[in-house]
Image (cartoon, rainbow, N blue to C red; front, side, top):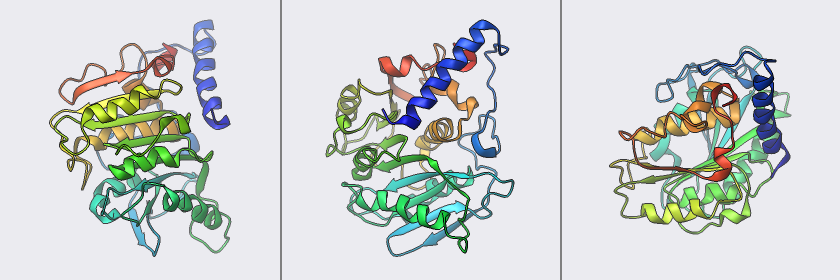
Length: 291
């Protein structure tokens, strides 16, 4: 497991021990711990975040980012994005803008064939250079220690493939295609399927999830969703993916209880999910209050 992910999991376990010892007041209520000063949003994952957004369309990538980066000295985590087959970032623009409004810098690969994640990973390289460039608007504003990969369909498979890069800390494959192997990575993964997806059947996504026993993995099957339900603003995929990214990349404690702990908020939400599961490793991650 990459060192950064190990440290975060260890930190969660340490918190649980401290709570048990009474060192920190134990509470089941959501908290608001935000790495790097990203403003809280409560639990409004599906609503626009606190940042205005700019979009820069370039030859290899399209960058979605807060219009004013680091206004209070915060640094912005990164999400690298992979498109579905034949698609371009503009098809998913509202979803990617949404993540940027929550404080992420999204580096979306422009390629319509993203499966090998080459252009996705190159987005990190670009941001590394710009973060070090005194003349760039990104200078000193990019949190290169907190990077996630995400994508849809072929790009969903690419999100897992991109996580072979040691710089990637978590992956969000949305209705991922089959050309990937979870054994290549050991970062936390949130697998998303659509109940009525006739292109990438839920059983195919669940097979990837079941092959992920060596890492913390969660499976969510969105009720009524077809294969194209996640394009545009992300539909019912928007809120849970935002919560996952805020937890793993911002340390947002309000999002912890959505996925972790015995009473996780998503576990019993049959209105949103037609299928939901957490593997053994995910179940060891403490919920709110260290439970």
